[in-house]
Image: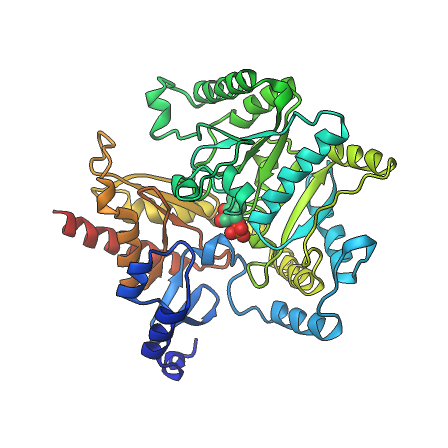
Length: 466
Ligand code: PLP
């Protein structure tokens, strides 16, 4: 990349202007005022440069999204061409556009066979909101208006809008807002590292059965005729990078079937290859009725979400429309032609370069690099991964799994220290967990640099703790 790029920018002026004008999401105002923002200006592949000219490897792919890497001409060319031809039109009242039609066909060809239609929005949060309303509408159409509670998991992240934020289970997303709303319920997340031993579950299968039983108890306590859906990420991302224990979704599915509860797979992170298959839900044994995607659909080049509607729900919607019912839901940007063009170009890159297969192929080496580099660090309790998603749980004591005090803010500190070593990783909210999710095109050499940078960061912070 152009090594002089930072010199075109007056970093100090940008930081100062940012301080006085930009209200950042999930950012403590005092920290932003004290530390100033990190101002990004240019990126290529897995590398990103800030306004001072410092280069980082983006081991987080933005927020789990820049899967094909930065600087893909095919995507920016497709965006430019479409925005010159037809930049925007809406898709209300049966109006359509060519890129969205082609994208819908393409997506259905990639998705599990039971999926019938695709509904568009702009974000993972709105995809979750759409799923909530689809479940409500579905049951209202079936004459079951009381069947509207939706169960998700503690520490899940499904977004921050009022409805999706209610499904989320991360404390800081609820605190200070008076959510969750009362349609939402939460069961335990599957946490083999910490929770399974507390439950005396000595095998993954036993833990899966325990968690399915917990769900069963909750549905019965609430009344099955009040429960519409269960929402889960195949591999939990922001809630800790938690791959499901063996048999988990099979056991969960049995409970859902028993009580006529629909399954929603939130694949906002996992969709389009992150774990080495196009969709992780199938690979995890889920039989979802709705699949929610965003992020990797365009690799973050433009905002776009897609909700896949499965046949059971779709057939109710079709039947209801014969009585004149309309799903009165949608956004100005649903089916945005330029965003659809970006998605088509992105999916074409993924297919042409075999990136899904590539993720599956390099997952083992990716994991091995971190086992070797940080597996022995005194504060690394566990490393877990699925494809190119990794979580590193930091602890005070590896043997007892004792936590560091929350005031140590260990994850944030390690992430900040990693920046000094030229690596961007994320400290997950309300946790001591570092997340990694590099672009699919990350090279072997870059993986080694990320692993070394993270080790150095962990060692720096370990020194500070002494
Ligand atoms: N669902 C999952 C699994 C996510 O990880 C996220 C964001 O990280 C969302 C939903 C919300 O997406 P957005 O930030 O685009 O609203």
